[in-house]
Amino acid sequence: MRKMVWSLAVLIAAVWATGCSSSATSPGQYQYPCVSGTNQTLANPLAMQAGVPTTIGQITIVAFGSSNALYSSYGQWIVSLVDNTGMPWTGAPLRLVSDPSGPHPYPSDFYYASSIPMLNPGHVYRAYLSQPNAACTGIPLGQFST
Image (cartoon, rainbow, N blue to C red):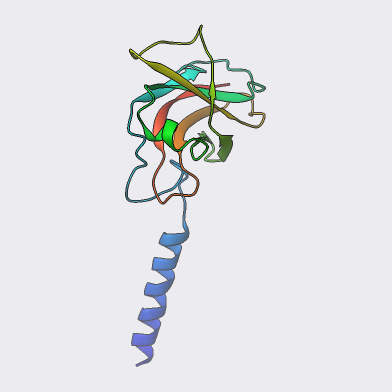
């Protein structure tokens, strides 16, 4: 009986430790990805850009068209970052912005920006499009470095 209780305690501890550990690989470690209903990519900074100022202040994405969840559920999406140390960074809700000099990868470009706090110098940041109040995993947008 004691051996069974001890084995159960060890099993519970192992399951608890596994469930509580976090690798911080992307915001919201859920089974299903968030669905925006469109294609999107980093616009400023660009994916793989190096030397991004720590004071950039916002991350801008470009999305294909306005017939999608980004446009129709305005204010319910954010840009989340995870740096190379695993530290998460949360941006403010997306807002429509103009970016005439930005990249134009789609036939109909819509730009959205998410304000972010000052970043750390010399870090690599992975960017995700996330819904903070939904049970879904953020959509990878690319990475950049400061």
